[in-house]
Length: 547
Image (cartoon, rainbow, N blue to C red; front, side, top):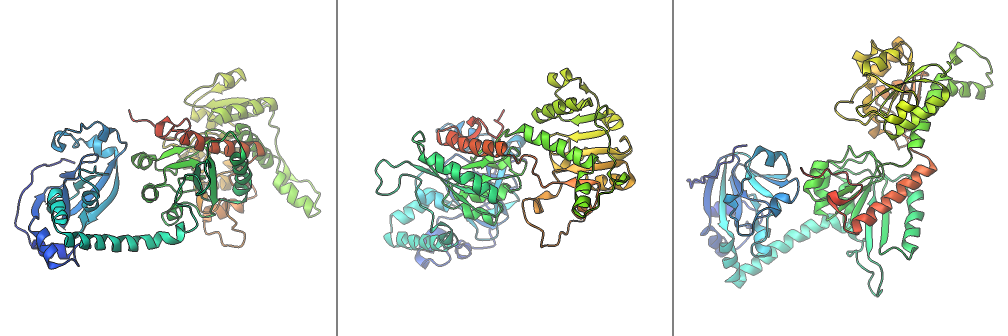
């Protein structure tokens, strides 16, 4: 955007009284108050990109839109606001660079005749600092009233002040109705309980997407934490089965922090709502955070912490379990024997892993443990990763290109993070490059595999079988009971009906040791935050510091 600072005073289609009548704040005030306000109004026409108010600077004008759209946006961090001297003029600060807008998050857009911004800032206190930058998205006609003029009107006339108090009270009453039911059982204070001298302060946490294991694991751990004499505060943790969404974000009213899992949707709009509810901390009870809008989280000042590792052994061992089930047809054999069918035929025929070539794509901690296990089988190891592991090399692993992995591997393990460059590593174009009949094992992220390509490969024989713990569109199904409902996803239905596929519902991590680590690290993350390690200073932060 090219920002234009020139203001032009132009004729208006509407009179000041007519535009005041369009506003929700002043439509019902007395004629005397309306006339007093109208006498101070000045019309401005600006080009797209003009900035009216800078984040972190004093709010100097009430703005009332006649035409056009204004946008409120926050910088990715408070560094810009902190860099402005208290004596600097807003016009001396350069907010016009493209980088400034790329590193900002849109809070909301304001459009339509009579929409107002800046009033509450002006009424709260003198020289209150702007929460966000207000700028014109389109050419706009905007009426301005200087903050000192508004204060003079209300400070010199008690009747006008009482009218404004009535307007504000009615607005608060309407807004509070949507929260009353949510906060009636939630204490309004996170400090010590009333009447308990010396009682420990309390952090209130709401866990979203809470299934039985979440509740059964966290409840006793929180109880033990609260009973510990070493803890300087208590944790009050509540649970909801709902996943985080724009609708369920309001459940967090009255809470200090929320606890999320892999399929909770913490997008920019959810984070905006949570910010308005004064939630400050997001603790992920998982390693992945791809469904958290980190850009928006940084702009709204959230601390976001994760569990960087729980049990890499759990995931690596589950990958081997999937391999052996697919290879030796354990799932098919189990069904047969339960039906008293004890015959053997080629439908149960597998292969030795000893002497076969295993391609491991992704040799981080989990991939390294997997290579160690495969080495015990006597498999030949091929590896692919941007960062080569000395441990894998010591096991006899050879780092090669993706193409060589595809060409030579009897089994391919996907152990990579889901990034733009790794999305759909297995795709239609790859099918013709694979060693025919290869087994595919994926315990990392569903998006690493194009499901349509996987199904096609299974049908043509290019892929001999698949052991998968993750699915590209799993968010709508996994961690929920669909046994009595109709699954509408045709790709998931195709996988469930294919006897060459063993599918588990994102349970590779699910061991006692891993759950203990998840619970312990989550509580530790809350302790670090309470101790003052916030934002990028948190040891398990998901937010990358600004360069």
